[in-house]
Length: 382
Image (cartoon, rainbow, N blue to C red; front, side, top):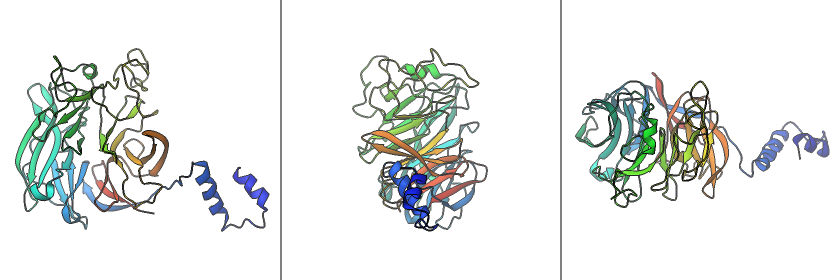
């Protein structure tokens, strides 16, 4: 039944202006399969951050934020931004490179340990590195900083570092690694780290049970391959690892990586070369290569990703997957059913370049905007 038909059948005298919005809401609820769409508002927690990239949640309502230029700062609950922490190693800042993701160890309350990744300079150029450190008792510096993994080979590029970190329920670390742009063909071979997802111990060793351990010519850290450039990753409520990755011009993907599987880049893609034209054979499927769970054409340039597990936004939002858009400045809300994406809506829009999306200990969603005057935002509950 359309809105107009409903109005006609009920009669104009009965449908007042006060009631009509409710009718629209009910009809939209039914048309959307029982999910009432809401575009949520935000509140600014802090501003004056320079190209912030990732946020982690410290005790007592504080935030730990990385800035791509190479700084890490503590933000107080009242929004006061602290001085840069001492002890951050040199980063190859430029283009997409710099200080990138940061996560707290699951045992942070007892060990004050954290992990961060960054573009590491070195012989041959640069590459993504994963470091472990301890936050000092006064939260002013990083102590015992140790690089536990470096992507190989290093290559002179300012693009496609990937660099999201997720600790799984077994205490292992997933690390997403970009293809370095002009080395895209490396994503299909197992003797390098370009275009891969790794699974590591907290010492940087290959995680037990990795699919390529003992296989000649394959690096044992590799968990899955054929990826382009992932700047979003998270655990689902069931503990499974999800990620998204940038396509070229079109073809951004959401994937649920499985051990040893090939996700196709650059052989299959729903995107095309910048400026137009097919990539390789221009195909979207091939035997032995996995299809994405969801993809975007045109690209939204995704960054940041989290499942909503709290009740703060109502039953309809719980279980949704939120993905930030650098290109369009919104947060996409993906509804999941049976391990598949069944619907996409906008949870928030008009935000600027959304770089990170996280759920805090308070159950609320926090966002970072990537700008010279970047912000830490809170997604308000309705």
